Amino acid sequence: MPTLSTFAGAIYLLQILASAFLAILFLQSGIDKVVDRRGNLEWLKGHFAKSPLAGVVPAMVIAITILEIAAGALSAIGCAVIFFTRDSTVAFYGAVISAVAIIALFFGQRLAKDYGGAAVLVPY
Image (tube, rainbow, N blue to C red; front, side, top):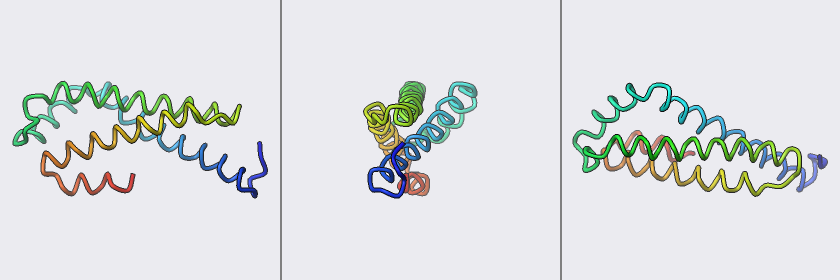
């Protein structure tokens, strides 16, 4: 492990922390969509009832669930890989999939005209 007071050490630590954050965020959300699929689907059907996406909510839930689990898994694996080998490649791909998932969520919130919900996603 590099000395954390150096620039390289700070980058190393930030990569681990960012990967851990994305892993927790997306694994929790993706697993929740699998465990409580019915509840999430019912809520989302109501949420998107008056949007152009009303007819494709089940397909959207599947797509976003896959994106979230992939993002979380790659980020978790990437976090471990960075810790043990200092190679950030897997974590990078986890971050890219995470960004795609956030953009998909943001797009859905905007189409549903849930501007407050879309605004909450911006800090991520």
